[in-house]
Image (cartoon, rainbow, N blue to C red; front, side, top):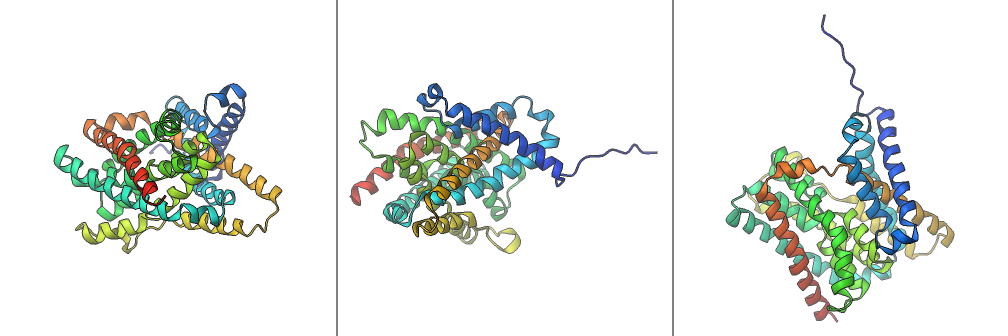
Length: 347
């Protein structure tokens, strides 16, 4: 008689509860640490600390808890992050969005186009990578990280291992950006380039990979930079749908399922910001919503850290990582030049 085994379903409430509890606890600890004067003085905000805590746990003992916690962790990484982004709109008004709008759209469009075309050329002609790997890394670097890669995968019908390699590259360099962008702001942005926090925020939102990474990097600089970064990033995220349509139309490939995924949470973000501009909610209620949003984003950052596996980087190999590095350098240097040029032209 065959031995029976029981593996808990991913949909069981217990598994969601375990993973959510883990991310909630780590986010709470990160929030407490971030409020300590000595830690705050170092420039490490609660979101960055939450990401670091998740990385430590994810690459140490989490493997023994994964079967129980994966569903809740993925829920926090995907659903709670999107809810946090939508609620972020309560920090903004339509006046702030329109003030950044034109320069943000032009900057995002030029940065996206140049980065993806560079990925195609470097990946295929210089590094000899296959088309799908180059396109996936290019999409993740130029638009919105892992989300763009996952959305591009059915359009070009890429193999799962190529998707995993591309995700590993954008997670690695995007995570590096969380720490590097605030450092560059202090050492270069305010002195050599004489940029305002808003201008640096647009640069951050138009060049850093993931939405969560943009939030963390902007948060480490200050509210003005964080708000500008989020607006620029949301404008960039909304370019995902037309990008995928163009890719399916001119890339010589078909897309599965007959449709292209649209980032609806970006529209939710804009809608909440428009509602907030009407000032219908009393300020104390808005303050509570912002505090809830901070915690939701910290929970999502924790989950993102937990799912950042160093083992994936080993599997990726040198060439995909080199392409990710070259695009990261381009986003910093070339994206910075595009930002400065647009700011000068529209001044």
